[in-house]
Image 1: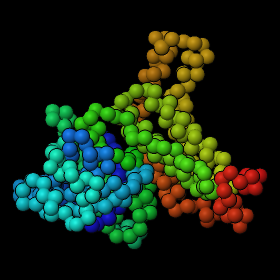
Image 2: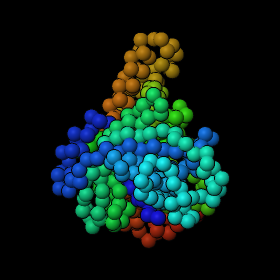
Image 3: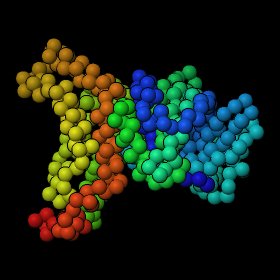
Image 4: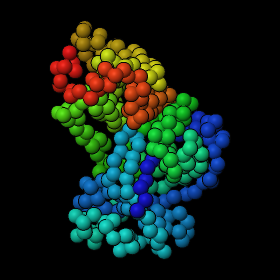
Length: 368
């Protein structure tokens, strides 16, 4: 088994040119282009989806096939770590008996005969190899479609896969790219996109709020900001599937909660870095301006059919569409993820603040 560590970033086709001319790619070793056709398998009852397992056969050439099994693993803010097994095949037919012992989950042993094709992904992949900050990282750009029968959905994403080095460098590289390219961290895999198209269910998987009991102040800070960043990613992806202006209200609320969390913990953990605060302020300004008409509608009790309300809805819809090419969302989320992963606040704390960090969240001594 290999352990796949990667950072997934979504972008729109219009942003590809920004990526192609990025200085980091000019220094990278181009690995070429290939056409990849993938068939994903599951049972009619979608047993694999329920366990968040992906099973596919990838065709890389006329007689070049590989069977891949990916386990659930973990994914936060686009940075995922999961088990992966690959087996070469002579033809495009499942051969689960070739998987190493223990790879196939014991609880799914009885469903092998029920497996059948569920959906396909068909895309062009371009690859670059980067030697960056002591790590070897593969950058791939995938562009194509997801197919379920006659239905199709566009696919356009960047993946940064760690070949050698520390996972944190993926976030740092993502931050560097986001300075010039409109990228957003994305926790949704190609398989999950396919399942959403297959089932026509666009709502994201439930994201339970952190369990606060027993957390220290520092852990609560990390948990709350991580939850908000993940919810932002879910909400943005939902907007792409269901482009409604109301999504802007939810995105604004999430930004406001980020701001409140950062401010509440400032006395203990200090200020967040400019890489977080600057794009956060920009996002708050843009979304608050786009949604200002909502306050007037509520204050004056205007009907939805009123011209002011209609024009306001069009404005926020336009602003949401512009997020596709805006730099601040990716800068905010990648800056926040890097801050949380590295625990960057530790470098600026006094001895007293270090003590408070480890105090229980509900400790009156810590809060007083």
